[in-house]
Length: 338
Figure 1 (cartoon, helix red, strand yellow):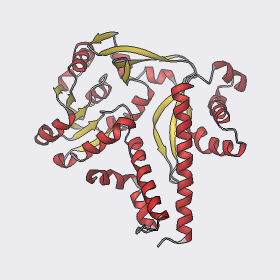
Figure 2 (cartoon, helix red, strand yellow; figure 1 turned 45 degrees about the vertical axis):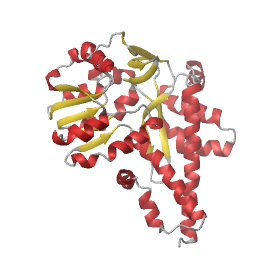
Figure 3 (cartoon, one colour; figure 1 turned 180 degrees about the vertical axis):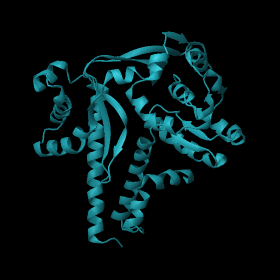
Figure 4 (tube, helix red, strand yellow; figure 1 turned 180 degrees about the horizontal axis):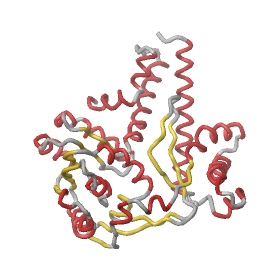
């Protein structure tokens, strides 16, 4: 039986979850329909040319635009908008080894196209995976540049599938840093992970599993020739899950990176499916692209189920057990058995 104090704590988490959802909905609306809402003229008017004020101006303008209630606007700005928004340095990304050494041509092979896109000055975009706080806040991280920024993109039937932009670079930093020994990666895209990992002395071999012949052709003909350490690369045309089930266990990989999805909308099911196959390669360390975002999506469902059981009087868990089930480490293991 939960105490009154514990029920109040759960209710506080529930209110935080509601604010998480509100902020996420505003971010989705902004990014999908209003990404150029913040203009150079607006930033100049607010900051009077003072660069150090741009992040505050950007976040304040967005929170004020989306939230009419003054008290709620102040709360959401302090807890979500302000920690979310960051001005990025375009030169930092242009100096990335992939940008410097891998020229991307404009090419088409079947349904796939290699091309480029641009972020406009002060256009907003997702810059990294969620930041998760101890109080259960989930902050989607947004960024902007104070100049135009061009980046390579691969399209499938005109729809963006993979692009080398800040979000991909930031969300792959940790997997790249951890990669070692004999590595397998599921999903090819533009080969950013493959290139960065192949530069590491601690990586002896990289097997890339990709099922699209057209993607393999684009990569092999137009991107791989520019790799300094292309001898480390082996490409296997295969379905990722079939390879993980039938081929991978005998290959003795040290490290695996799974990057098969576009976002959480198609990623949750594939994440769970691959997690269940980890046991077949128990000596391999697995990492997953945007895992925090995926785990947050699953945690919301778990929390909602727990709250339904509490409200219906059917809950048998202690407060500590509930907190344990909401931890990301617990969820990582839990999904292997659902």
